[in-house]
Every structure is written in structure tokens, then in C-alpha cells.
Length: 395
Ligand SMILES: Cc1cc2nc3c(=O)[nH]c(=O)nc-3n(C[C@H](O)[C@H](O)[C@H](O)COP(=O)(O)OP(=O)(O)OC[C@H]3O[C@@H](n4cnc5c(N)ncnc54)[C@H](O)[C@@H]3O)c2cc1C
Image (cartoon, rainbow, N blue to C red; front, top):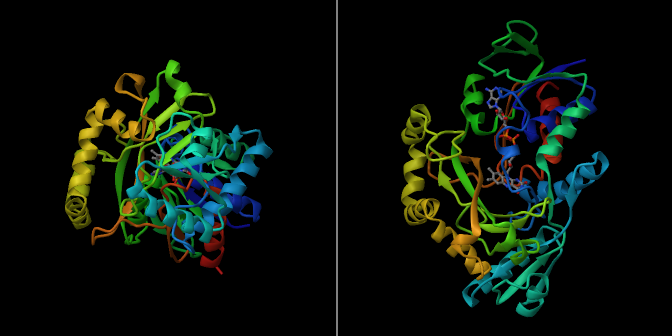
């Protein structure tokens, strides 16, 4: 039996470990934090995406459509809370109609059923919405991703799962062609390495002697919640028409499984890889970002959007104004700060953001170097893809 060491106990690492075990391999999972899913997998919108946004044929498109079905089936089988409630993508002005139509075309190309709805029909779903037209997507859902992580851990019971265990150094084994990973508790020996280290995936790749084709830039996504007495303004999920130039979907309103309504996330550069507020600062992380030529090229390209995002981050009034474009009754006094998340977004040296999931391989190594949204939705599919790549790496 061959052993694979998986670095990173987020949803992607755990789903990959589960798939490897299903294929008859032994696994060791190393997670530096004291709990599973402590970072991106535990700080996100908890939306099961349908797959309408992504370039047809891309890994994101294929794996989100398949992942939408597989994560919902997994959740139902394991008693994880999930609800396939559908969502509304709302054009708030006539200028947005061509982009809404392009999105409908993309959804159809990806095999995602969508319905074009009039402003009146949109208001039957969401009475408070300001729409000139909308798309109704029935297969979008809401889920509890931390509970998915717990269910994956439960399936892996009896295997070598190690919390509080960072991978500190990685080298090729001197004999047998495997890998050795140094941890504070000793060396783990395995036949192959999988890197699912999220916000640190480029660093873990470098530890393993691989020069990653892109660097991770941490983008914080901040959220507000609607005050309990204003929750009635939103029944389900209300999204704007995204700007195709930007990698993120734009602030949206999401009714969560517990009935609360979350608003966000925005996107500001975090001053630490796991920087959940402006106070979280790491000189080493800032130097890393500042030294990378891609950052400066990206900053030049998106100077105005970036500045607006920072202003909105400090101003509840501006945040509320963005939300009021979708639901005009939302005002600054309706919003209460909620927990933020930090996205691991890969950036190339030429300043372009890596749009698709990115998985690089080296002998006996597989590195997941870009797994932003919708990677939680797609996690079981990414796990299958990575497990296949591991088996090919030692074939
Ligand atoms: C604000 C926000 C909203 C999002 N909304 C959605 C959504 O609604 N739907 C959706 O599908 N996706 C969403 N996503 C994306 C989704 O959360 C991520 O794509 C997914 O969680 C990535 O999982 P992961 O396992 O790759 O990363 P992570 O969950 O970040 O896990 C990586 C793990 O590696 C560990 N690690 C790092 N370095 C080491 C080391 N050296 N040794 C040991 N362990 C290490 C970390 O501690 C961490 O636990 C969102 C993300 C954010 C941030």
C-alpha cells in the first residue's frame, strides 16, 4: 500500500485525502492549525455555486457543475445542512443587460439551466429587489462547509490525521523515490506529496523544490450581516451582474441556513496571508507581496477599483450603497459587521490573475496552486482530479 502525505486540512486537502483512501491508498494529513478548515474553508459565503460564471471547458466550469451535484449528494448522505434554494442575478440598469445576456449564454454553454425573468417576475422571488431584468438559477444552494469538513474527517477516522502539525521542510527521500516532510514531531515519509496549503500553497511548493508558476496574493473579503429585524428584506440569494474584468462576483446578499442574511464580500489586499482585519499585519507577507512584480502590474491595472474597495472597507455607508443598488431599502444602520475571510488568489508575474484552478505536478508531487471560489463547491471533484494526478505521478 502506498502512502500519500497531504499538506493542508481545508476542504480541498480533506476531500483529496478521502478520495485517495477510497482508491486504496494510505494517507497522512498535516494541518498546522488546531482545527480542520480553519482558514478559507471556514470563512466563506457557504454557497453551493451552480457553475454559470466560468469559461466553458475550464476546470472551474466542469468541476463546479459536477461539484454542485456531488457536494449536495454528499451533504444529504452525511446529514450536513444544505438547501438548494436557487438565486437571482439582478441587472439594476439597462446598461447591464448585454452582460446579463452574455452570462445566460455562458450558463447555457456550461449546461447550467437558467431562466430569464422580467422585473415583475424577479420581484415575485425577491419583493424588495431593484431589477430591470434578472436570471433565475435554480441549482444554486446554501450549505455548511465547516460541517462538510467535519463529515470528511469522520470518514477518514482511523487514518493518520495530524492537527497542529505544520510541514516545515520537504525533500526527496534519499532512497525509494518518495518524499520526506519535516514536522515539529518528526519526519513523515511517504510515496507522494499533495500540497493543498491554500494561502501558503506557493510557499509549500517552494519548500518542495518546485518553482510555482504563480504567487498567492491574499484578498480579504469583508462581510456585514443584516440586523435581525431587517432580514425580511431578503428571502434568498441576490447577486449583481459581475464585471467580467474582475475575478470576484461583487458584493451580494445571501440568506444563510440559520436565517441570517450576509452581505459581502468585498475584496481588499490583506496585509497578512491570514489577515482577517486591517490590524493583522505581517512584515514578511507584505514584503513578499511588494517584491513580486505581478503585484505592481495588477495595482496599475486596477488602481481605481482597488482604491474604491479600500474606501468601501472603511465606510459602512459606502458598503450599504453597493447593497442598495440591489435592494434599495438596505441602509447603513441595517448592517452589523460579521467575520471576514481571506481568499488565496494566484497571480502571475505579468500581473494577470490566474482565472482557472491551477494544479501543477512534479515527480511524486501534486501542487494545488489556485483553488479560490468555487473550490469549496468543487472540492470532491478537485479531490478526484488530484488523486488521479498522484497515481499518474508514480505510474
Ligand atoms: C470570502 C470568501 C468567500 C467564499 N465563498 C465561497 C462560496 O460561497 N462557495 C465556494 O464554493 N467557495 C467559496 N470560497 C472559496 C473557498 O472557501 C475556497 O476555495 C476553499 O475553501 C479552498 O479550500 P482549501 O482547502 O484549498 O484552502 P483552506 O481552507 O485555506 O485550507 C488550506 C489549509 O492549509 C493549511 N496549511 C497551510 N500551510 C501549511 C503547512 N505548511 N503545513 C500544514 N498545513 C498548512 C492551512 O492552515 C489551511 O487550513 C470563498 C472564499 C472566501 C475567502
